[in-house]
Length: 164
Image (cartoon, rainbow, N blue to C red):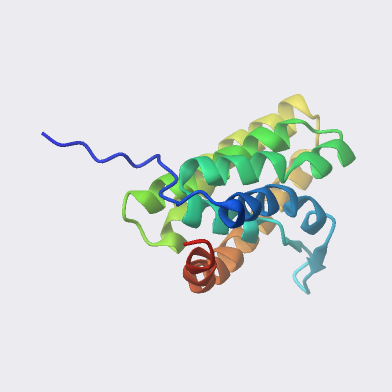
């Protein structure tokens, strides 16, 4: 039986590909400072787009790296280190499901389903946030994740071509 390795980066390493991975790991910190308010009463976060691009281009470990390093500012700003692990989970599983052949949008949805129990439990029981606030975050992240998964779906191939 031949096993398929779903974890490799599958990238020709060059200055350009390493630079892109570093960008995808650090720039979400800046995007984490920007939120778009909606008329439905919640904010759409922007940083996930780059995490999903990293997951699509570099696989599970690219998503993990981008999710982790890209959450540093938000974790420090909100005094909630659990955000880092949660976004590592989100990025890793988005890349993992995508490497398993699942459409990127569906991969992000499944990653969201794995990420949410971590987020809810750590925010409520470890960070001490009110349940009503955490439930609002869960809803906002659902829509944010799907919006940015759609954007990443239509743009990751162009990004990947740029580092090939």
